[in-house]
Length: 472
Ligand SMILES: Nc1nc2c(ncn2[C@@H]2O[C@H](COP(=O)(O)OP(=O)(O)OP(=O)(O)O)[C@@H](O)[C@H]2O)c(=O)[nH]1
Ligand SMILES: [Mg+2]
Image 1 (cartoon, rainbow, N blue to C red):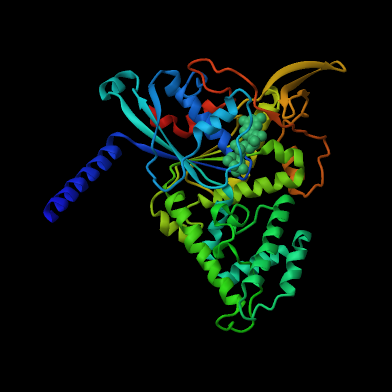
Image 2: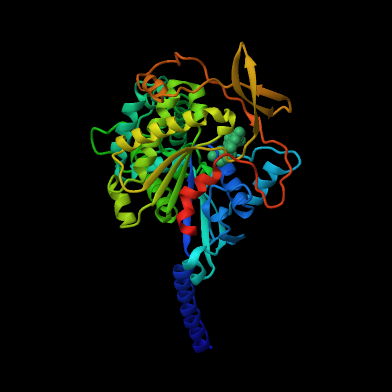
């Protein structure tokens, strides 16, 4: 019996090694990370990308699709058994069903495997025969990337930095007051810990609403199933004058901070981040422009912070973790371009490019290929031109969420991106040149023709940059 089991185990082991080897040699796996802050458009992006890779009629900008080199695409069980599956069918049904609506917010990491059968064209391709390329697409909140800086910081250093930044902000006043009323050296009690954590989380939420993105720990804003656990029930405290006694509130807070790092942050970077080959960062540029100069400046800073997470050498802990592994391509995509007329897409792209250039400079970034684009994962509007006071204005028409039809002229984006970026950096309170409005359109009701995925803007170009080279 034992021998039988052993032999079985051995054969199994050999087979596993064999299949891993053949997968590595003949069936390349590309892990594509999709991130962005809450509501940036990650779920809609993945759903539309996958649907458009399965039915490729609207993907002329993806060379392999245009040339007919992709001969099949199908969903497969993903390789990671413990990661929730991305609910593709549910999200697609929401977007393209009889009463189209936007998908529900998602708050944790999820994954989907799409496999493509590729028959490269040309002499070499014909010689090599068809092969299978697996795309593992991973959806994760951008907030989690900002936790990286905790890994190289002690609790006291993190606290000092956070409290120094909080001091001048009005949103922090209630938390700082709670802190003043707390005796950090008193014996630990769960009630005091919870009050501090709640007050600190309320500050992070308010800071986020005021346009600050330096809101760590990231999971305090996106707790998922960890809500209420000790690893998420701590707060920064002022540096102690003497070494705190055992059992003191301060000591337990420090222990929980370290638990957060080792049990929450580290597994994410190890299991997901470290394995990513290609990355999309989605940003809501039009939303930020609509909110005003402070939000645009904050968006620029957060692009810089996110890019920093991909910069080898910036963080000692991450450098040790990654070894030689590097993400190869990073796409910054401004989503929801269907809110403006196509005549302004050039300006939108130019603003994204200028912001990416600045972020690259600030983060001293070299290595991965980067690109900035303006896209719409799901086009929810149609365009029309109207004469207003003798001028021809490009407008967009869509269905509002209450079912009414609306035509919108969102304002004109400047030809020169510095007209927006300079006032944002100089701390202007509002735009001098005019206002930019956005409206929330519901997904348009449409029947998809056979062979076509949902309508989009430049999703094919985004796919070409991200994975095109792997499909040749
Ligand atoms: N018009 C338009 N709106 C979009 C598009 N993509 C996303 N949106 C809007 O942005 C909202 C958020 O999109 P999601 O894909 O759910 O964003 P997310 O990043 O997954 O958000 P969380 O799951 O909350 O982190 C949607 O409810 C839509 O209102 C698009 O291509 N066009
Ligand atoms: Mg989502």
